[in-house]
Structures are given as structure tokens and as C-alpha cells.
Amino acid sequence: MDGERVSSTKKSRSKIKVMLVVFFDWKGNVHHEFAPCVQMVNKQLHQEVLARLRDAVRMKRHELWENQTWMLHHDNAPVHASLIRSYLAKHQTSVVPHPPYSPDLAPADFFLFPKLKTTLKGRRFQTIEESQENVIRELHAITGNAFQESFQQLKKCWERCYRQ
Image 1 (cartoon, helix red, strand yellow):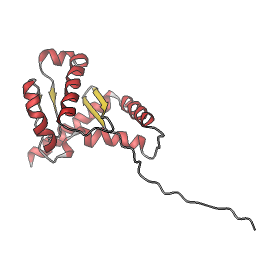
Image 2 (tube, one colour):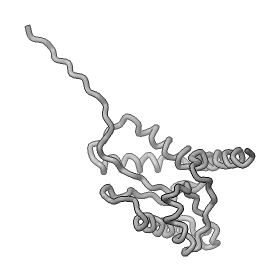
Image 3 (tube, helix red, strand yellow):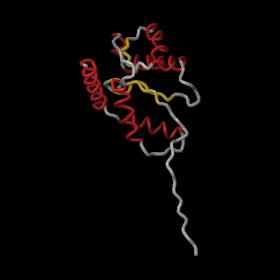
């Protein structure tokens, strides 16, 4: 008797990891890039990314650059804080204060990355390039209204945090 063989597959996490670095404001994406796959995120890489961010702000948010009113909001993780504090001071970049260990006050954590993950969840990509293309497509699909709503949500979170 000839039988049909049924095999089951187990979903597994991808062995390929791609790290997206995104800077955005209430109008939308200001700068994004992917960290090199083989490079550790260290002080040098962080400073190079910040230099490219400054260039992007100069081009995309010209009025903020000219008025020197643009500010950086980073999550204040210990690894970030010590690395970039001197760089930002040297380049006269204002930083929005952020309490450590407060992901509910980081729009990337409560808005952007969950939104990207929701649209990409369960999809498999054959190459890093295909993965990156899809992430960028989804990033560009986020509307200006969604970014504005995220900053309204941030404002409410800040108010709640500081009332306690």
C-alpha cells in the first residue's frame, strides 16, 4: 500500500537580523538607514548615523535647521546616553529629556516599530535586500496623520508620567 507522507514544518525565527535606524518627527520620516549586518553598534557607528541625521535635518527640515529649533529625542538607554552626549553638545544639538527605562515614552517603541511589525508579521523574505525593501515600503506607507497622532499620544504619556 502506497501511503501519503505528511510532514509538518515548524516556524522558526530567521537567522538573518536586520536593524533599522529611524529618526522621525510629527511630519514623518526624517532619516532612516539599515545598520551594516556585520558591524557592531558602537560609538563610531552611532556618531556616523548622527552625522547623516544632521544632514537629513538640514535638507528635509530646513526651517528647523536654520532656526536651530530641531531637537533630538532618544531613549536615553545607558549605551546611547554616554556615547552621544558629548557629540550632541559639540554640535549644539538640543535633546529632549527622557527618563531611563521608559519605553512608553519613546514613539519608536510604542508607535513606529509595532506598526511596522504588524504589517510585516508572518511574512518571509528570501534575501536581506527583499526584507529591507519591504520594510522601507511599509515605512513610507505610514501617513503624516499617523505620525501626528503618535506625537499626541506621546504628549499624553508625558503628562501622565509627570503627574505621578
